[in-house]
Length: 355
Ligand code: IMP
Ligand code: ZN
Image (cartoon, rainbow, N blue to C red; front, side):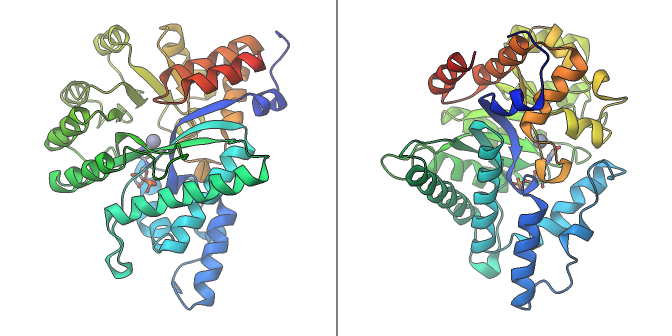
């Protein structure tokens, strides 16, 4: 068991992905196919080919330029039912091929009024895509489900309270499986978006409503210095999140609070290093600090379509830069499962079989 960790081992490892944004997880080839289809229909003629428009991973000089690719490009391509469904199915297929067996995929409900799509319809399309893809795989793989996928609905930091309330309302309405025999459902809500957009305190009632309705809460936490003021971090912790995304610039007294409340950390190495949210290289990533603090850690990809590092590679990178043995890597996969909001029994069984 304690031989060096390689890519094949991390690929075979049954993995739980808890921090992945749907629109940021779409592979460039999939975006290209969608772009070509639109061009053939004389749509989006002003949009460049994604292979030109999307820079290589690591070439986004600022956080702002990274967030612009969604509003200026990806959302313009994924603006109709067919594109949203195709993109969702391709994301699921990519995670499956990487050995992800449990996925909590997050997405921000979007309205496309020209297409008759409101927040509720957007979520319905994504859920139909998950169920359709699952069913197809079920027939293909001798009637065994390969990937258990659930949803987290994101509230963007730039939303008004009314918009955030609408997201939470849609989340509450989607807490149950769509049809008998289907597992997928909305498990919780997230706060995401450009961290330079402040303040966020007006969104508190929406997160309170989500909690009261039994939804789980995760928030992007201390991603940049701007979003790591004591006021913002204390506000976010008052929303009772059970997980925190990134958790980069956390002051010592809040590290203690996070430990004492048993809050889990969703950590994304490549995303942080390539987008320069963290200083230095992989070995300097705060993964080491959180792991030493004995908090639950779940490695995640964040935006694998942009940063092009699959979850298996994130495990490999952690092993390489923090000197993890195979049994420690399996322990890390178990740690992610312990922070998951559903599917722990099946994943624990898979990991028992693996080790
Ligand atoms: P979507 O929610 O499926 O549309 O995925 C894209 C969205 O995720 C972006 O518009 C951002 O709001 C959010 N997002 C992606 N990566 C990050 C991140 O690193 N920090 C905060 N928000 C992010
Ligand atoms: Zn994120």
